[in-house]
Length: 119
Image 1 (tube, helix red, strand yellow):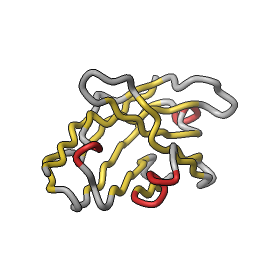
Image 2 (tube, rainbow, N blue to C red; image 1 turned 90 degrees about the horizontal axis):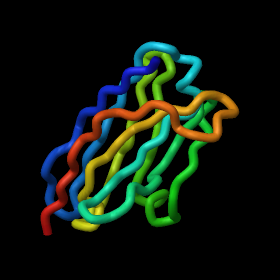
Image 3 (tube, one colour; image 1 turned 135 degrees about the vertical axis):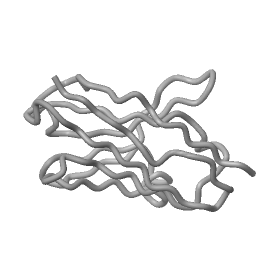
């Protein structure tokens, strides 16, 4: 089992920045890849970014890559998502999830943290 605790969400004005954190505990073998997802009201959950234990990162779009930065501290088993130049359309509940090495699916999910960007 893996427990994920997210923090760092909140209300920010458009153009502002936030850093989300997600700390994992438990079976660390299942945390090879740590990913960030988000879900806005009435929309499906979407992938934002992910990073492996070796630091290989992927982003959903070039726009996300330009504004968001994912990083992790393996000693703390924590992933960070730095979000800059936030837009109202970035408002959503942000979730982190983990996947083991070679895993096809994300197995464990956090409870989510709300990000609201005001215009």
